[in-house]
Length: 205
Picture 1 (cartoon, rainbow, N blue to C red):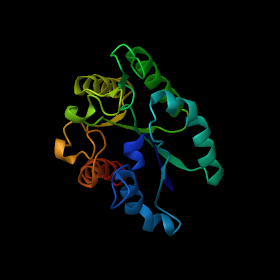
Picture 2 (spheres, rainbow, N blue to C red):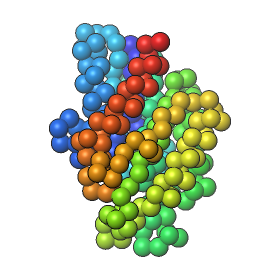
Picture 3 (cartoon, rainbow, N blue to C red):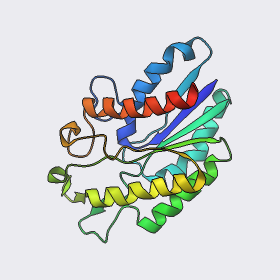
């Protein structure tokens, strides 16, 4: 049985999709019948709200051990992480995960992942509505130029290590965002369509 382990933040966790629980939950539903019959593909969503690449590094080994206890099988690791890394608080100098640390985190995530599977996928990041994210909360700011910079680094890492990359930067429009940061139901559906198509091509060639 293939197992898809999803590591991510509140977007992959499913925030603001009040109909189907997010794009990752849609994947789980897609594969649920074959998984329930004792074969096929299992989907484990290990995403955590507000997570960033540093958070993934802190938990990935333990997360893998937990799934191994259930039943060790062939893994696909799907990382949808990085949107929270370029957030800055009050000033641009106070960034959540500085770019050099971010690059290092991505390299370490890949290094750990390769110990467990050859099938490693990263999604790109999604746009924000700067009219609502400057600031998003009282003192937290997201800007698209930072999102693009961090997104491009994911693609660079994937090319370097010959990993799958699913671009999402052009998938959403402003009206697909619920609060300027998180996709609404329609946005999650668009992300799901893009990722599911990539997975289907990979799994069922």
